Image 1 (spheres, rainbow, N blue to C red):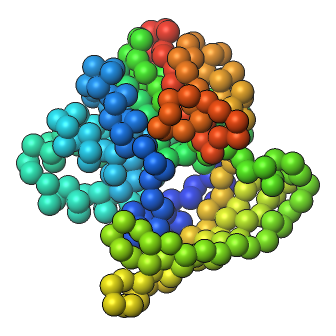
Image 2: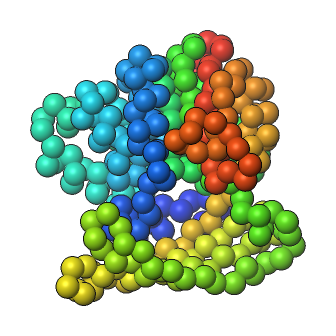
Length: 272
């Protein structure tokens, strides 16, 4: 569903919420990177936009960091709440959750740190809505506050030819850390007019002793923002770029990075 330039993929995430942690593992070093960012920025509180099942939020809460998590998928938030129920009281009290559209978010609190994690901002369709998302973050940031945006970079196969529509299918199998075996079949295509990237992913999850856990289908649509485009929007809105990295581990940029991780500081008083 597309509305006002925003791609609502919440139902797709609702479909796989219960097994999301198995199906889509975190990139290497991601959790450690964000935990380190929080410590270097004074320890929170943190606004995490796109908190999902809480893989990062829970880690921060265990570190005694106050976290406000926002997500548009109700089922992803339900999984997070189930995890919270098994946590000590002090951890539960460190997390506040909102089921909300990031473009419409209006909280009374401002934060020293705001994160767009897991490619959340790539659910925006147009430059205008990337602008709106970053404007929302700035409204919720204190002066001098830190904003971190991570995105996946566009694969070379599509970047070289945006007029090709169908990029075929690919499949694979991998073992996730909990020893579930996951077979996947994926189809990737582009709608050239709107630069929409569409993925259909089918997963078969096998547990211990070959027991079938379930079959899942994940249909999602997203965009690949240009790194320079994001930097331009950030600077226009009064941010100073601190650094741009290509992965979560090295702390540097490099040729053909899988990710763009942009760290910026809010140079202005927030305007509400």
